[in-house]
Image (cartoon, rainbow, N blue to C red; front, side, top):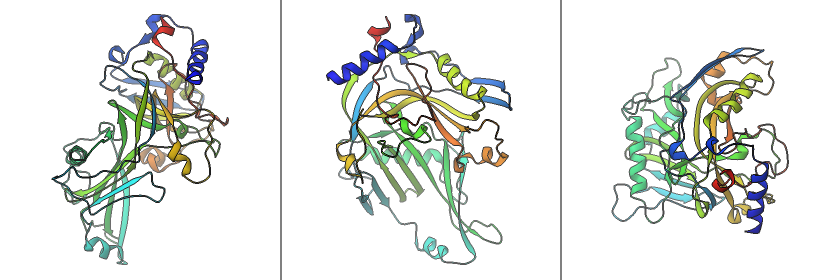
Length: 371
């Protein structure tokens, strides 16, 4: 506890000067309906047009969490039953398989004139639309079915954010020559875990390009793949809160967050922004390095702080021009990146930070410190 207090006090001393009017609770934080602007940089013109989002909660917390080693189990008589539920070899990620994608899919894989083709479609999405060829399953039905599985899961259960679907992966079987879809395609989405109604975007280290190899790393989320109500797969891992360090913390204005991202645009790094959303990120316990293998996960502890997530196209070489196809199918490119901005300080987490411990927790700002 003394160590934790030291982090908080050190951080409070070095925080940017600001008046009490510059801080907001999440419940009354003003956020623009759209961030729409055009930036003429020294290299190119960049247009931004996104709708920033914040969670519909009254407070945003600072949490201590651990890997949960959770696996879904039916709660008595349920509408679903699993063909297989197991942990992976490392023991921290679960897989749930229901139904069977069918002998016809297995047969299709072996035919010379059939190609298994996967591709992504991008939002914004219509919940009432189907995006998988030859399949009437809508995105809304898929997410509703996912929620119903969790609702009928026994004991403690995590929650997941279904409001920020960035992309859908479509898997099809096509005739090589004609391109005809031979079987109903299925859809796959990746959903972040939610803590106290706030989406947990991932680990802060995922925004750092060249971090040390022994930096801790854990990324809670679930991948959900579905063909129909009888045939689907869940794969993922989650964390569980063990302590609330603060039930409510002050946030900086959205303008400061926007300024941090604008600096990266004007510096020539950000080429396109797809979304800007407030949520959580995981930080490492300070001073802890990863042991070999996966044993370190069993005793790992992480801290959760509020951040703004910016999903974008990012290139560190400012003079390098990118081809058009990168922007039409971004997720498969190395330039598709998540940047994080600290929601209390408005400071961008440096994507080129190579320091040992660049993913370490550094405390938080309290309401008492800003009054």
